[in-house]
Amino acid sequence: MLKFNAHLGFQFNELPFLQRIEAAAAAGFRAVEFPSPYEFDASLLADHLAQHNLPLIQFSAPAGLTKGIAAVHGKEGDFRSGLLQAANYAKALGCSDVHIMSGITTRDDAALIYESNLEYTVKYFEDQGLRPLIEVICAQEMPGYYMSDFSKAQHVLETFPSVGLILDLYHAQRLTGDAADVLARFYERTVHVQIADCPGRHQPGTGSMDFCALFTILEQRGYQGWIGCEYRPTGVTVESLDWIKPFTA
Picture 1 (cartoon, helix red, strand yellow):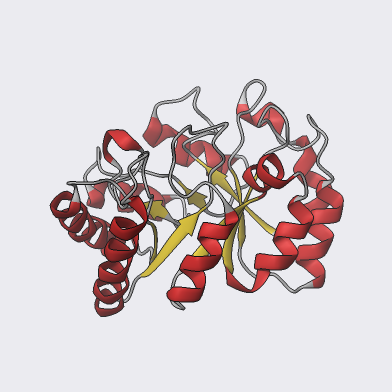
Picture 2 (cartoon, rainbow, N blue to C red):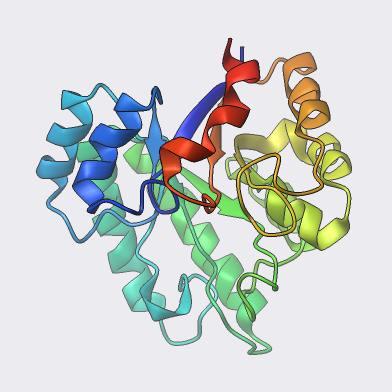
């Protein structure tokens, strides 16, 4: 059976952040993810998650104002200090997967900076018992984002065998028009799946994507990971969850 987790950066936004954890549990979710925990004390977050028995699936290293700094010139020192902060939070929150966001940049040296920072991350995280993740994010959602096509992701995954892929099927559909093909090509390196319908980035059933087919692929391949609901609900979050029932019954 497929496992769906709440994304607290997108869902339950009608509530203050800490209340979203309780709301996710009350709605039936058994895990959560959110991009940035750093505005809260790690022990406070850990207590809230434990109180509602919700593991944290993944979060991001400090991203700054550029939606990540791994490929951003002049931020190498900030990047390394951010990894230390991320490692501390990961241990406190019991989460071993950390998303390394590339950031928004148009500089010609972005590829060299990004690869150098990833090489450092892989070595540092190996010592910490953590796994770095990357994600391809479409330019329509985040103009100028460096990791914005799957050819770049393919290069990273070939270069760094320990790096995992967050495969957001919405971004895959926006970029290629064929999320199922991307899923087939990158399945072996995918450690986490995210979903939203296209266009609109709302809950499944509001756009043109065939989630029955996509979920069937995952089931047939024996996918054991989580599927993060990284969509913008069209209304109150709990009213956007009817689509999930046939896939969790």
